[in-house]
Image (cartoon, rainbow, N blue to C red; front, side, top):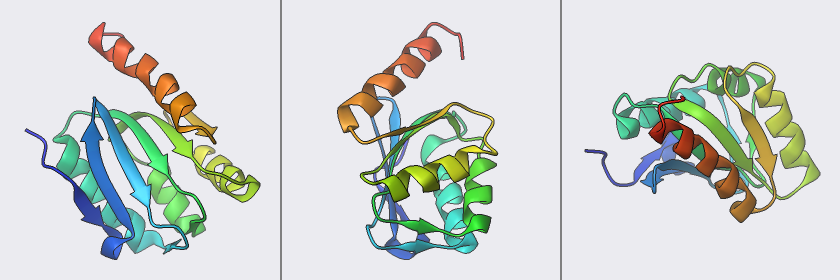
Amino acid sequence: MMPGRIDAADGKNSLIVREGILESVWRPGSFVDVDDAKDAMHAVDRIIGGSPMPMLSEMTDVEFSAAARFEFAKSTGVVAIAVLGSSAVDRVIAAATSRHTHYPHEFFTSRKAAMTWLADFIQAEVQGEV
């Protein structure tokens, strides 16, 4: 059984699983360093319980160090990630993180579009294609 909400990175990040999707929300205005990234990834491991799943990451107005972006790219806890942001800067940060990932990674400005994209991965998981 997955725990409820988990906070990580000194409260900068909050994680919860809803409808088969791991939702990660970063506090706007945060600066995320490598230690924050490692703590968030440990929280991901705790909440998913060893079963990688699709993730929605809300990161509007959040700055990530290069080391933090590289740490996130090493994640094995997700099968795909939809990054939700609101600006060109958010898009650039998401693109910088995606360079090193080994899983599908897309940027969205619409939560509905992001969730629709992630739903395809849940369906593939149900059908044993992931």
